Image 1 (cartoon, one colour):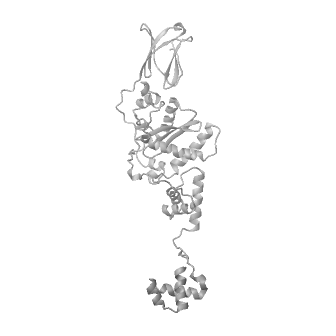
Image 2 (image 1 turned 180 degrees about the vertical axis):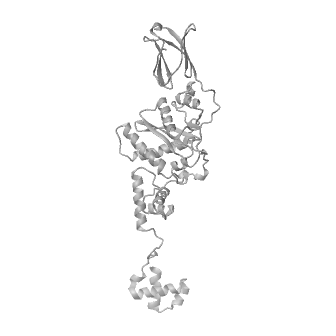
Length: 377
């Protein structure tokens, strides 16, 4: 107010000309005339600085849009789903023909104090991304811990579709096979599968094959493993698990595995059918998965689908020997007459031969994986 009052006082008290004051103080005459008009109308209060904010803003986001944006933000956040400006924009586009832009939605969220400042991140353009060309060309799988249980997930690399996600107290090699087939039953077999080097995914460090390796070789599916200590190779399934656990953290804690599975199934349905995915141009994974022809197993360069083992064993009191096939125990009947006899078991996948130490064949059979006991005859 100092300069304004000085100019007014100089004109009113001293009678100095407006043009002279404007010239000597480097201001425009119109401003001095405006100050004089305010002074005559309001007195010294008229010389107080006036806000430059316009009385009306035709382009300001309407109160209705602000309320809907904040309500949708609250709903998504409450359910543990993504609730950024881009996601909110995608949801609004499904309900309205003309919606505010993502930048406008971001400003609404920021004005409401809902935007958390983040440190400067590496630009997305600097990342080298790898993506399968077709659905079912490659599936990614991994296991993540959630509180006191484990969750095994499988997603399609091309569409990010969650093929299946299941909770277990602890994932075993048999669970890996059953979960894989559960997804394949609904979406068909993939051309390849990518996983890390966990013990339930590979037995290579132990000099053998685990159940899922044997199954994939038999089906002609290429099996790939990430480089040790390099989780970025399986980054898509890692990111899916991060999103899933964010949702589960916002839910009411459950007391049983079945209740947890219900929460997971609800999330998977939303994730596949509704959730706009940033990497898919804000489309839902199910829509991207359905849009193109599906890949299928086409054979590979692995050795023939035969797994060889040699075992020394004793026939038990009930006249049987026991072997493990695909992580399941099977009992082979030989008869009580051979009780306590030392035998040699030669296994080539499902082709099993039981011999005496001298080489006499006691029994030859093709193992039936659906039966625990393989009877004589």
